[in-house]
Image (cartoon, rainbow, N blue to C red):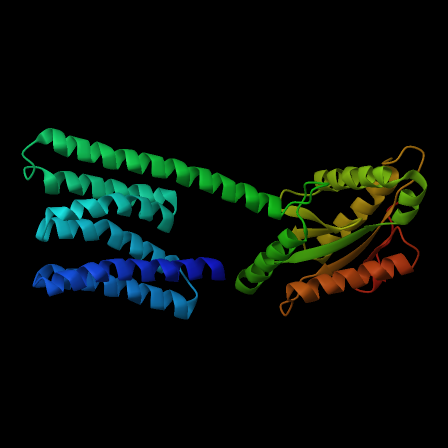
Length: 327
């Protein structure tokens, strides 16, 4: 739940209700009861959406309905009451791009622009005025779309940066937590098998101390790439700190997990990551249980990793037992 987004949505509905309600009060005092009633209905609709967002903490429905109100409101007012409703079209066009994803905003604004053409056709004697108005609204729509697309690209880029490890470009701890939660939810719905593998480079401190941190970083990057290329498309690797990695093997049962982890351990042992210096890894494996949370699942895999390192390193521990080494 994004509290910031819901808070902004509540503020938006309050501002919208206040602005339109102010017009309603003015028209009520001017004895324009029909238009005042319409303004109050729109203002109360915004207040209701704000209240719903505040109580539930969900802003998706409120955004969609607010965009619909912003689309229909000016058209109804223009058709039923007064031509001054055209002024609301300009602000509505921009607001809709703020409220909903740009694909939906294009649909709402296109519908509003088309409807405006029918509503205004024949009511404006000078067709050049109608053309100028529609072109102006179209330009506002185009510029708003450009800003929305830029914002979308920036959002995607920031999201990507927030879940990627800077050194290896694999997922980081945050990405791991999100993916584990997805897998656990799939398990609850469909009974999906999955295994979690914690990996640690053996005696990594010695590499840093004798060869320098640059050599250590190189080893981490090479190991990350090496493991990634050994995995299936459905498997993912994450770096959660230092020389520790985690693999999520979606759909893997006990037998598949055993084969995968020992294959990785053996392949790393035979590969030369640092010239003239052997490099090995220890692995701890945990199969997903129905009662697992992300924390409990990771804790069990980490405990198995600790057993593997305590028992001599360069081995795989699974359910408290060492997996026999490949020949």
